[in-house]
Image 1 (tube, rainbow, N blue to C red):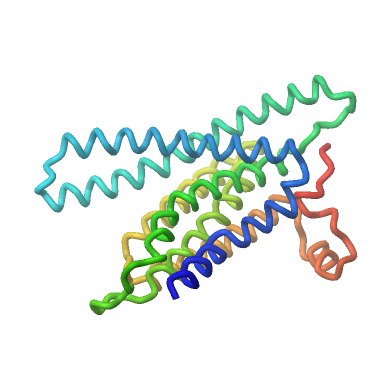
Image 2 (cartoon, one colour):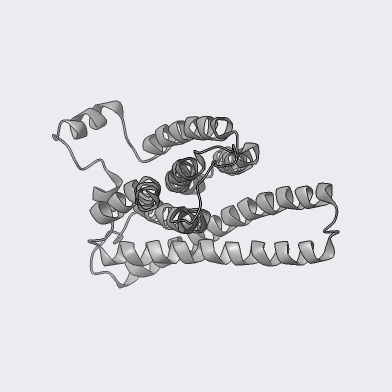
Length: 258
C-alpha cells in the first residue's frame, strides 16, 4: 500500500511536467541547457533565503511561539521575493545569451525565441521547486506508519502531490507572463505575478484544511494558464485547430524564432 501511495503521488506531482519535458524540451540540447540553468537559479534563491532564515532563527527566541510563527511568515515572503528577483536576473541573462547566440549564428534569426525561453526556464524553476517541496513527503510515504491513524486527515500525501503539481505548472505560467511583461514593460503584470506567487505560498498556512488551499490555488492556476496562453500568442481559433490536429505551430515548443 505504501508503494502505491509513493508512486501515485509521484506521478501526480511530476507526471504532467515530465511529459512536457519529454515532448517539448528533451529533443533540443539548447532547451535542456536553459532548463538546467533555470533550475540552478532557483536553487541559488533557495540558498540565500535559507541562509537568511538560519540566521534569523538563531537570533530569535525559540521559546516564543508567536515569534516563530512570524519568522515562518517572513521566511515564506522572503523566499518568494528572492525567487522573483532571480527570475528577473535570469531573464536579463537570457537576453544577453540570446544576443550572443545571434551574433555567432549563421542565420538572421535567434536560435530560440524569448517565449520558448520563458517556458523552458519556468519549467526549470517548477521542477526544482516541486522537488524540494515534496521529496521529503514522498520519502515518508513509503512507511513505516499510517497517515491519519490518530484522527488526522488521511489526505496529506495526495493533497501535497496536487499542490506540488499546481506549483510546478504555476512556475511555468508565471515565467511566460513575467518574460512577456518584461519585454513589453508592463510593470503591473510583473506585480501581479509576484502577488499571485505570494498568495499561493501563503495559502499553505491554512493546512491541514486542504480544501482551503487547493481550491483557491487551482483557481489561480486556471487564471494564470489562460493569461500565459494569451501571452504566448494563443487564441481560441488556433487552440481549436490544434485540438483537431490541424495546426501544431502555435505551441511554444514549435515556435520559430523571429
